[in-house]
Length: 599
View (cartoon, one colour):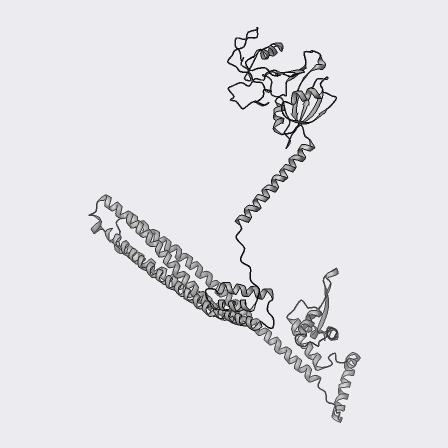
């Protein structure tokens, strides 16, 4: 069925019949001295894709070695390779899990037996669906077999030795998309996903920490043991966890309540121990801080001494006796010492600032919260004054440092320009700090003035409210005095009543016949309280809001009673409608100051 590799004659005969000399993929002739008598050079070994052991697809070879497709002889047909100079046949994108290929260009007289004979050597075939239009679909058992079948794309097929057109054709093999292949591929992917999930779950179970031991249920024996454990300082955390679990489970009843009470009491006794341990640790921490601060201060002092040694060596009396290299080293050492000293100074100042902030926080926590707004304003003003004084002291300290630096600069008169630069930099830094402190001081002063103005305004408002409350009390007292009338009537009272009636007749019939809208002392009190309430609500309030305020004083007050009382005093209270549509709301306003003018 296949030609031996030592016999190259069929390959040359096929290429000669097609009118093409043997040419490689690169376009160069494989046989420079091609013999028409079918002679071929022994240096080129042809490859048979159907050769047993080599499979359809040859092993990957180097690009320098040309890949030659040779003639394939089958039992009832012959396959001739395509022209090597032509481009490779185009194929579609490979579907996932593809096991089916499309084969076109079959001879008209091709049968399923012929297709099985040609493509059966690529691998096991499970199904062949042949069409009447010279093409078919072949489904293989394995996916790699498809690549072997694609290797036959471009071959010319001839049935036997016939030259009839119906017995020849050019094969075109391509990937085909089949539902069965896609279904099997999806099933395989789901299986792989399940295996991966199972593997991850097993890994998580392996890495998961072990579960804590279960908590035993309550019993008299366990209760006695737990009581001893709670009293032990080392076993207390584990024992209190068991006690908490018992309490959450609800295992407390009347019979064992005394036992639980004793265990809870034993747990409470550990509070003093824990507080003492905490205070001891805090004390140790404070001692460590003090020790560190003392050691750091000593280190800073030694650095100051080293820097003073370098400054003394930099003076002209000693500086002139050093060589140039020695001066360079001394200058470098002095700069390093100054940098380290400044760093430690900043660290020490930071520790002191933190201590001052902690002390100020403690002082703020110790001061009780004032209940009155006036007392809170006064405390804020005092705090601002203290902060202002502290800033002023810091400002004076910076000024003193600047003056000392200026004096030292005037006395020493350093020779080197580098020392001048360092002093000028220090002066500039101090001046910038001084300017910042001055700005902060001005800002604090403005804030202090603003707070004092707000405090004065609040005091004025308070005095005004006090005067209004006093006026309302006087008016309420007058209303109470006017409604206390005697029961017995004398002649003098009759004469005075006649005088009053005459005066009422002179005023008009409306004033004479109008009864008093306030019927009792309780209603007078309500009028005064409602007037005070509505006076501090200039935009008015609803009847529910007013009643909720009054019910704090007397729970027996009825909203209908209050609304009827307000309606009887139109010159004192006025009802207004606010809002639109669904948000329409009735509000009562105090109009006594306008009503007294109209009456």
